[in-house]
Length: 372
Image (tube, rainbow, N blue to C red; front, side):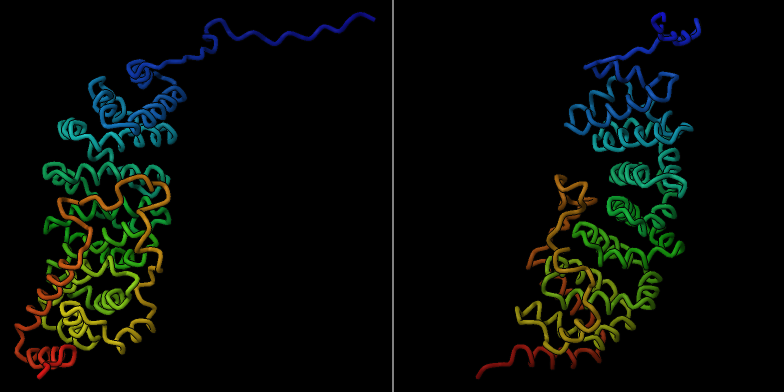
C-alpha cells in the first residue's frame, strides 16, 4: 500500500491578505490602528490604550497629542459592542486629564455620544466608564451645562439601582456634580431619584454612602425636595445613622442634610419626635447619645449599612483609587469640629421656632446639668 498523503487545505483566495500579527511598543502605531476597518483590530487597540492611560497622567496627555480622542469618539458610537466597551474604557480614564476634557468640550457631539451609552441596552462595564467620564467632565461648569442639556439626569438616576457598585459610585458622583444647579435638583425629583439616592446610604461601600449624603445635602436646598424626603421618611433613616456609633464617619454629612431639612417647620416636628434635637445637643456637648433613642434606632435596623461599610473603600475594583478625594471642591472627610458645627447650625435653625426653645432648654439641662 502506498503512503497516505495528507490532503492539502484549500488555499485562501488571492484577494485576501494573509494573517499578519503586529507587535508594537509605540503609542502612535496603536492610535493608527484605531482607524482600521477591522473591528477586531479596533477593539485590541482600544484595550491597549486603556491599559496605557491607566498607568499615569502623562500617558493620557500623550494620547491626546497623538490624536486619539477623535477616533475614540467615533468608536463609542459604532455598532460593535466590544469595540464600544473598550473605546469608552479608554476615553473614560483619559477624562481624568484636564486637557482631554477641554478637547471634548470643543466637540459638541462628544457629550451626547457618552450619555447615549447609559442606555439600558448597554452592559455594566459600558455604564461604569460612561458614568465615570461624565463625573469627571462635570467638575467643570461648561461641561456640566452640556451634560445636563444632553439629558443625562434620567439615565444616571436609573443607574443608581444597578447591581454593580462601580456603576453606582460613578453615577452618584456625576449626580453630585450636576445637582449643584437648581434645575438638576428638580429633575432628580421628577425622575423619582430621591428614593434611590437615599437608599445608597445603606451601601456596603463608604465612598458611595458619602457621595449619596453629599448629593442629598445639595438636593435638600430645594424646598420641594425636602417635602418629598419627609414623605419617604428620610428624617427617621438619617437619625438612625446618627444613632449608630460604627457609622461615626458619616455623622457630619448626616447632620448637614438634617440641618437643611430643618428649614421647614414640618421637619422640625419630625426631628423632635425622633429624638433628633437631643442627639444634636449631645454631639455638641460631647455627651453619649441618649440611650432610649439608640435603642429605638437599633429596632429600626440602623442605617442597614453594616459595620464594615464605614471603613471600606469605594469598591472592589478600585481599591487603589483615592477613596476620599474631594468631590466638586467639597471635602467628604468628616472631622469632629465639622460635626459640632453642623449640629450647632441645626439647633440654631430649630431655635427659630419659639415653641422649640423650651424643648432645647430642657434637653440642655438634662445632658449638661448645672453644678452648684
